Length: 115
Figure 1 (spheres, rainbow, N blue to C red):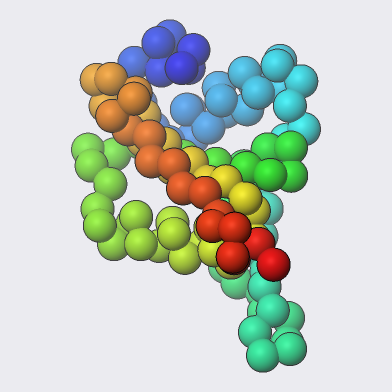
Figure 2: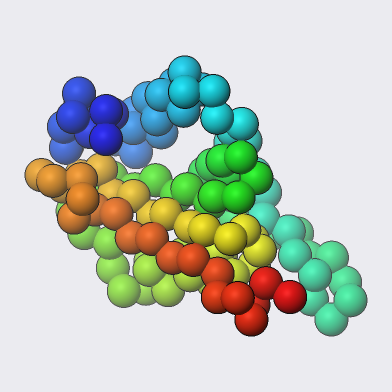
């Protein structure tokens, strides 16, 4: 919220990502940036060209956007990446909105998926 409150909408994705990293580190979160997505498929390890913007405290996938609107396809891609990440919670945050609350999409892993 501080990043959006300070910068407002209209900047590039990398600007928001850098400032968000500063905020999270200042709050002493354990933060990994640009984590490559790897997963197992039929017993084989698959490496992809997909990068997770942030993994916070080993439990939260945080993907950053700065665009007019997040498309349905982009939401589906986020859901697929979230599923493959095996993290319990995911946030897709679009900073290019007047009210940040309208730019946040949260998903959580269902209990049956955890096992």
